[in-house]
Image: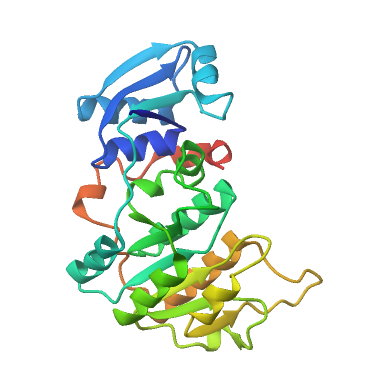
Length: 271
């Protein structure tokens, strides 16, 4: 069954990726450089473009912030955990996986996927139940990064952590109760970074299956950052400790002549 995605970055990145796009729909009216870039990419890859009323886009997106553009695409497919590990092996890199323990807010999920792509993580693992999945809202929040980061869905996070440990990964959990601060930990090897639920943090069972717990030091009055912010800081620390090696997700397939992106001029609507 086909699905709709919306927003300039998500549609553009879907067109740039290997995901099948059936058609692109653009609202009637003037077209700024950002929309023109999306239309040019659609024509470049042979995807039909349909001009429709803005009301039509409002109805299809249920009044989401579609930025005047939507696309009808093939349904998104989840990867297998083995695919994520194979990706690291093919690139000759120590695996870096992001494991999300019951993240429920689509904004947090999209933001974490966006950061995972930015630092070159090899994939994201989410639970099948009681957690946010891949939706158009996640596409939008990730600014299209979900097109380039494989996401695996598992029935049991703790079992997945055990399997990763057997494959040689070091499972590192983010917890405000940890004694070790993130910058003092050795995060250079094969890592599965575990980020917990927005309200409860990492579950007790997931904590027990982590090899190491780390925390972000807090100097102000608030006790913690939200899941997306904390996870992003930790991901960048892992990348820093790895010597800022080239991100795994930057490949010839994901680079196009217009990759300098005029869409940066529309950063307010991107959020």
